[in-house]
Length: 433
Image (tube, rainbow, N blue to C red; front, top):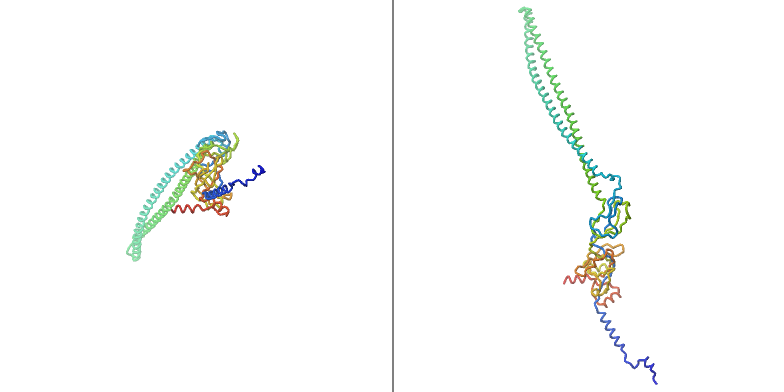
């Protein structure tokens, strides 16, 4: 008798399908091994912006002050030029509410002083002209007098010559009279007359010599007076010129003081405009550091951050040094962002869901602090657009697309530890074709 339990447990007499399933599985495995697989490099990074003006900007106070009023709070959206807060002055040098007006009064006073010295310069120039004219007149008078004395000297010299001739004749006549008187040819009266004539001629000579010496002395005195006049008027001109140059120096100094004061006026006016801290661009206010009214703000101190509204996003991904030769500019990268669901098949990027396309636009040549090299990926605007509501700092995962190879080759490469195929070689071949 055959038991039913034995028939249910042992299937020796039944036909088996294991061989069929094994053959199907083997064929399926072989088929899968020849399916294409896209080699890739997986990277991590975050979202940022390429342009400096689109990154979060610090709000700084250019001058120290005391907070008077807040116009915004954390999270407020502002436009460029909107007032963030108002501060008041705390430095003693700027506490005067009429500081600008008083400084402008100093400018006007300095300008008045400059005009006074300009007028003084004009007066001094007139004095110089008058002194020069008086000097020329005086010297001309002396020159004329010297010329007259020179003429007089010539006349007296001629007179002295004539007197000497007369004296010589009178002496000859006296000598002849003496000889004739000794011989008895003339009387004593005649001899005395000749002697009187000689004495008169001698007196005339002495008088002519005295006149000549006096004229020469007068000429010498006039030359001395001429030199004295030159010296006197030179001193006057030097003193007046000194006053003129001193006034010119005062004018130059006043001009410098005026420029300095006008610079202070402009600085004070600009400083008044710095009491209101304005938004530098459209964006959102975050991380305000000051608590309320009355707090002191130091110069260049950060009081908050403004996050720009319009941003051109990029992804900063970090590549291992071993993978750096495999990437290059304009290389395609598939990205996923934190907060945006995605189903990723790294070997079949076209079958992935929730990924976004990008292109590498730059690769930094210097290693980052984390020991990786940074690559900058920009949006590929010919493909699916990146999410518009992303934020700077959002995490990003990147898959750099390399070469297409069979699955068996990829498994064999990983088992042997070989690097992926160098993608640039294929591109060079394509470009060559």
